[in-house]
Length: 193
Image 1 (cartoon, rainbow, N blue to C red):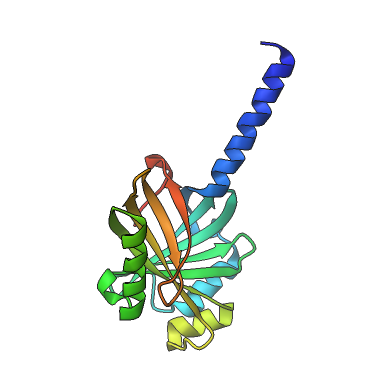
Image 2 (cartoon, rainbow, N blue to C red):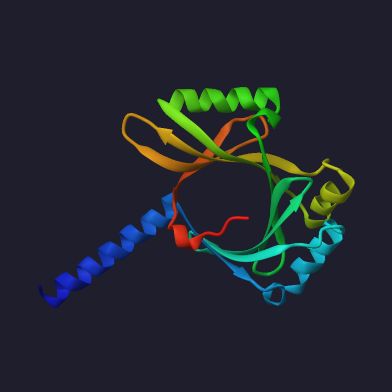
């Protein structure tokens, strides 16, 4: 092969890699020590989850974006709190069961899956809270939900006429579909609770 052919192939493979990253969820996380986490994040967790002592910290890279994630268990619920690398909280995700979804939300989500897939299997449902850091802290410790945006992140296997994949779907509080990403995982890159 000539040098110019190699250069063209390199650029094409780089372009395809970028496209894959934009359409797929590629995630890596590794456990980190508390001392490696920005002080703002540790302080936010201490203020919001005062009685939680065991916090597991992770550094996460998802499709080119880096963040820190605190994983805790409160009242037998798995909760993850994600912060950007500057120490600002991005969201809180609380794992729930399908029967805990509001009725209208569950009905709309099921309509989406029945329309889009021949078969589907919901693997994990998380209620996702976003808002200002102070509002999120109030939601956690005072149950004040006034300024909190609630969405649902659902990890599922979907079988359609043309594809069988693991997906992550995002739905609004009413269960309306927002977006989905194909999940690309390598078993050694992710750690569970």
